[in-house]
Length: 525
Image (tube, rainbow, N blue to C red):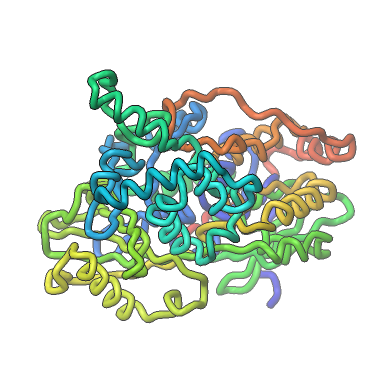
């Protein structure tokens, strides 16, 4: 098809998720012209969007608005100053008909497991400490060293393999280190004994070495409310355009360093010319659309992603459980996690006599679960709620299905080398191409981490040089809900930049600030 629309802007952005919209908001606020393409025809926010069905609102994955970065907290308050509510934090593990606190509380877990299995767990833990695995390469290695074989098999193996669709011994230890760091069974048991002797009055007997937040802020209409408002404010500046239903087709750079981004949509194609490009597209997808193809394409094509879908059930009942969500560690069912949308915000569920829950199924795009008809998925979710003893099928009065592709970048044994190859290749050749966000960097970042990568990228563009190395964001792999909100104010330092890269980064400073101003407002209402 021929191009039906052309634009010239300072910065083109691929993806209207938290990273892309954060970059667009900050750039337009500073007077730069921006065009954002988003392949979804209706929703902004990416995995942080809120889907609406017959007045019911569904959070895709559950998004607590908590960050140790004061810059991120301030930005949330700036974009959405009047619509946050404070919500209690509660999530538990469901295993063999019993609920376990999450993070695990050692004595509660051992009591629920019974004397014999508890003894085996403690013996297994002692054995792991006495004879740890010396070569720690996989998720299995790391977790067994921390908790022992028995607790690993009960509380980690089944759920983790549901989520990732691969054996734990083929997953990188990076995943465990990033998501479970700071949990210590030994410390939890010691604290429990101290409490039993009256020597420890602390209320939290969890396995976490740091207290997790007991409440969190949340937009009253779901996380999509934040990103819908960010999109509105971007367009209201007159410097920003959000092109919905536009997917990346090709990205090329001319001899003068100007980028040409071609986006496909129902009406044809659009071409955007820009000095800088910020991409939150999956690394594998980006690599295959750069022209000419990058040297690192073979490595990028080896990167894998895990998809998932949510089956939302409307149930004629009071709320089934008080948790924001529960983790299902049960091999009898395929569901991995169950959200309770009213516990996130009462305004998500318009009928006080109806409970609305979302069953999350982890899958690969195109497999049996992903390809099932919506009605069949609703029937499956209803059956599994009955198997778990959580609902009578007669109470289910309706359902809806939301699919999310590339929800999780996979941390297999080779991912780190492949990401490093693509990063080094593109940074050396294209210093004005910036990869941000969860999929843009193939890193299991949280929403606030994705935002921070975009915030630092904007600072680099505004300065005309690489002040900050965005790859340092979340590099310490510390559990994201430990510590105080806004406690971190130090920004990551940059890695070395060559003189040629610095010159290219500075090219935007020579572009008139209002190039491309007055862009069409094409975002769907």
